[in-house]
Image 1 (cartoon, rainbow, N blue to C red):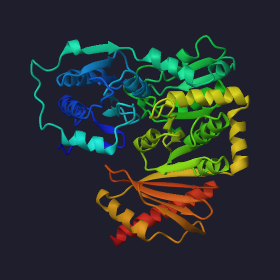
Image 2: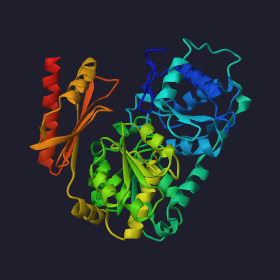
Image 3: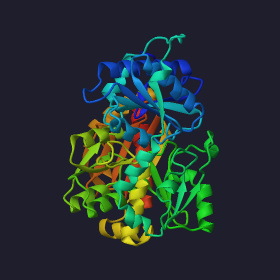
Image 4: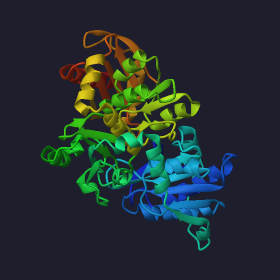
Length: 474
């Protein structure tokens, strides 16, 4: 197993021309093909779906993956254009494929590319599968004249069927006649043009911002966070709309801004979509959230007799709950939102359309809808801070903190300690603080939430102090 090829929370990612090279991509493709040959579900065909995003050399990497996979006798359906990750997740089960590959580094900086692995049901590969793919990596991969079978590769446009499915999931008639003014900050990613296509010939208007193909992503990381919204905020302040949707580089995450460019937090989007799903009587008696997601979700679920399941960070854990059945919706702090009736994966484009459905039916502004939630469930203020922390000390930090947590958070007694992914401390009054290592970098992530901005800053500072004290003791 190569020390330079490691699958993280969602696939393998690395810097292009350093570790993400054509040889290494061939090695991962070979181990992927071997895995699916050994573990192909009986209901699937000997077929693999492959997509790619707009990053530098993504199309060429995808073509190499396709060639290698045909060596194991698989038919390959290769995207004929840059394609959103959720369209690939949707197409895998739709086309009875054994699995799928998406060449993307999602929201990472432009220097990165990546290899996402999808299983036969369209969900992200879990940790067990990823470890097996790592184990099967060949030491080297020598390209020969016999490599691949181009006749087994079929180029496919996956978008028409996917777009039709998106329209069918929502009350499209209500959206179509709503007259909503929509902006879409595509962050130079593959989501560009999707909302235009879906809402064409309706009363809605769509302005796509940052929609051109730019492998450098306009000098930003294509992540839906407020730091990357500055130019869009200025534009919307001069040219107001009803809502601005934001998608990341491969369009599986959603962010948003109000009509005048004020950023919405991912937690606000999540709570709006959760309440809307409940009000719309979507099927399922459970909701699933990652540990780092707002506790307003807990209150909404409790008020509506909806069972709440908490998972570790990474949508593959949420997807695993989807596959168990009876789930209405699932989400994570980073903007990943999924609807299991659609696919067992996150879909930023569908989440955006469901948000439009909410606005069309409620006939209220996004601000008014958020005020309703806060009036009912109280204010929730969230913050996250990433700090440098020695990688080798993170396991020790988590062990000590889980066994010897502080007695109080912001003068409220610690009532619950969760330690299955980092350590999350929840106080009796609902305030919470979580520390979690990145796993691959010397970075400690500190998350916190309470009912005031000052309070959440105090929690973040207390998290930094805890980490420093334990590090000194180690």
